[in-house]
Image (cartoon, rainbow, N blue to C red; front, top):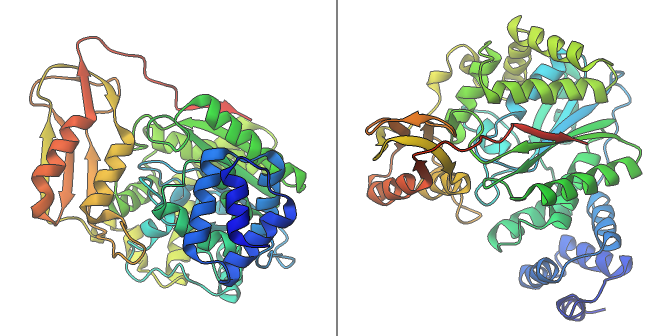
Length: 433
């Protein structure tokens, strides 16, 4: 069969068979189908929709496009966490070592920035020397020694997703439930896990901007995981404002380390504790949610979680001194603070725009081969619901490229909406499935 025939079939609203989906995925992974044809099929799928059967076939093909790991030498439960992507979401850097300190192994395979959202790998690589490109043998050794390992996709693990992930990012085909589900679940199920906790974002900084869409994605992924006999829980969480106080690769890594050092105030730490506690339940090392939360808090306050992070940084080639003094991480040499032009209450923050500003200022990739300026970052001073006076700081930008400063300042000012009357602040955790 010809790729153009399958593109035409989907373009005209037809449903592809499992064999036709397999032909596309296998052909693209092997290099027989070029980027431009696969990009056309991705866009046709996004515009015309995909059935549950097509989605299941896509997950199956992407999962088995490479090897599926097993960890017979690790006797404790293997559990991972995955977020659907947000702004300021650095939870993996806290959750993985905290869960490992509480008795589960975390074989975490993560991705890079996608559209306006940050990527766990980019945050880790802000740590000098940190290697995310480990071989599978290295990955297994780090996992066995540290209780966690934090890497990107290798050539052997879900290679179809690795290629499609990058292509979706540059062809505006990211925010589509079947593609998101297939990307996440193919990677996660290939890790050799027993259970998975999903953090499905909703709001103006998420790919799923509406609760109903987020709920549908969560149910889709939970269903796929349970069909494959994995224990899966999904939390639907708010992304109508950045998670935590910082946005940007290095500054988010600093915030994660500060949390591991014992700063458990605020919604970022709250979500980290909740996600990790759910991992302990999924891994069956705890049966009571409140006891699981308390165990997680103890792992952080005792220094055990930070020690796990230090060990994995050192084992993966990074500078472990960042765990003692995270200020050694890069930060832009120039800073500019944007202040409120009127008094009132913060009723809206254009969260996705903040992510795009960081990307456009050099903190992300506009093309596949772009280098990242790890020092670009935003410090959030005024969250949703905050009451501000004229001149109060809203956000401070840290950057190195002065040529874009005026444009970015205008975009930052426009991202905050101040009104006379306050508006309700959405709850951090909307629902648990």
